[in-house]
Length: 404
Ligand code: ATP
Image (tube, rainbow, N blue to C red; front, top):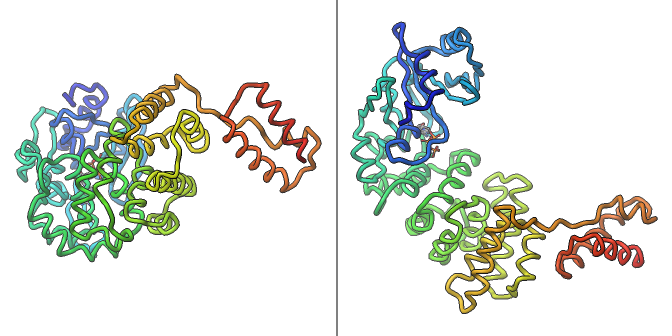
């Protein structure tokens, strides 16, 4: 069915023939076989980067060398981007990055990939090429390393995180025993990886289908020690994860995890190189989760509105998780319905109606005082129900100016 996509067909028509071969590879083939959505289509080819560029030019496709050092070119066909990469073989590694050479052999390219389910390739003729038993593993829903797990992990320790990430997304049952044992034996290697690479895999793991269980497995086996702080009730993560299944937001799941392991938002920011915006959200969500844990947060319709205005609609996921199975199912249902309304746009997110310019216009001199006044006014606005109609906004402004 992948090959019925017109843009992909055009691409493959151009990049096959004249002694060259190009196939779809990796996640796209895996997901197509599973009947799951395919978002990005990656291809691998016998052609060298210069030749990929040259053929794009000839066919009138736009081509951008997005990862030239790895031999990756992004080719755009009728608005759809495809990554085409020259076939590679690993030659050596320091445990962080493999040094690769270009090759012309599809088998060797498959063997250097991490898991059997990630090593399938699809030709223009519709044939699926499986050199590692990936189709059987896909059918059995298991994630297995290609070759000896321990050796493969030593080539690139990130594969430990990837093992759990792909397990959480695609597998059934327990993690593959060999992969699990090898990951455990080599887990100190995670320490040499860049924080950015860990963060990328961790955030993907946190939104995977079976994130809850997998996080617990990770914790039980001590993988989170060193990466995150103390270990607490991981069972709660299941609950947290269960209430945003349609559209999970990585950062708020990270917040849930942070609360569970009593990890500090500041340390996580540094540990995972979070952006300012991510850090702000993480701290806010983690704060909410903590309040809910100690039941210090009253939950009613007004509180829901305040939450959304103060943070964002996704913060309702925190409420959903915390109120699941609690004595007050009304709040739970209200929060669920509210989240649906905000997500669909049926209800607008309340936006604080005053700007600095409003105060200046009202006669307050420019300066740091403006920010303080706005912050105080915002608190009052939140406490009083986040009204956004014009009369309320005017009243609020009058109040602020009188206090000045
Ligand atoms: P998703 O879209 O869910 O991230 P994906 O399979 O596209 O899935 P990527 O991380 O984009 O995942 O990797 C693309 C492919 O490159 C993988 O399917 C795998 O074959 C190969 N690959 C990526 N990272 C590694 C690695 N660290 N070691 C070995 N092979 C890898």
